[in-house]
Image (cartoon, rainbow, N blue to C red):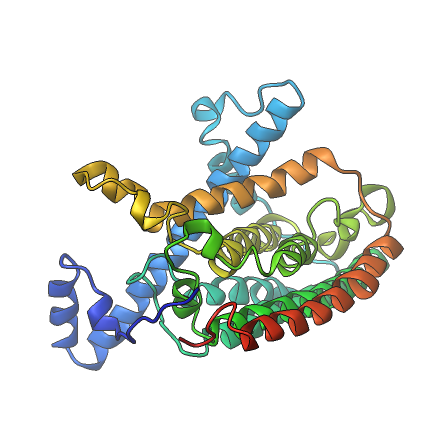
Length: 371
């Protein structure tokens, strides 16, 4: 159920049209290296920011259709509504509470946003399209996604508001609880793939049986645990007690406005998109085609479309991103004690138990770990 890929450096991953730019910048010395790093960062950050804007539009339209209404339809036929909201937030006055801790109050949104974008450095979009093909990519990913909670805690404490502080404590407890379950689920993936490299994890799911080679089948409980925990970790419905309007208003963000609030908003949706990417990468074969190779016709255009490629990954991402919206429109909000019970008494014990099952499957050759 597994395959190997060769370790490649950054220069090898460059496409033909970026190679001349890369060579020219490298000829400039240290300045060119810095410019090249900045360009690579922007190549990830800018599409993520734009994706967040269109994701908000899609959320409002999809929920509108589920509620038998139109959703946004006036500003650019609704498509540009998110951009209008961004400009509104950017031009709003940032009102800081009088007794807030000024340095931490300003720093908290940045601490929340930075890890949400830094995690994208190791996310592969195709077999040869990744910013950093790090061997310990999974470990780096766990480290980055666990840092965002510090921004939430600092935002609640620095605001000098009981409502914000209560929301921050709720969020911190919830995020930490479900991060443990997500971490255990990824331990099963690591055992099955025999690697911490995200590209190798995807290629470990390749084979002749198409979608039946993917990890979702032998790791079905871990697959469900990972995605549901991702919904809970991003504080989305039905786990959004952090922002329960009838209880604590807007949680840790209640004292933020304007561009500072926009940073929290951007981090939340960037994390949602990140979870939507990581779920198919870990469990659904990433960019691999669900169709067995023997079934794909040897036709120039159709054969390419049905074969492996980034378009399969984006199709899977679109499905999981839409599931976030679907859950919001369908399920009532959980009580806080129910959320904690689900995480600690159901997900964590089940994930630990299934790690043992995955280890036994690897031992008996269900998948050849590391091969």
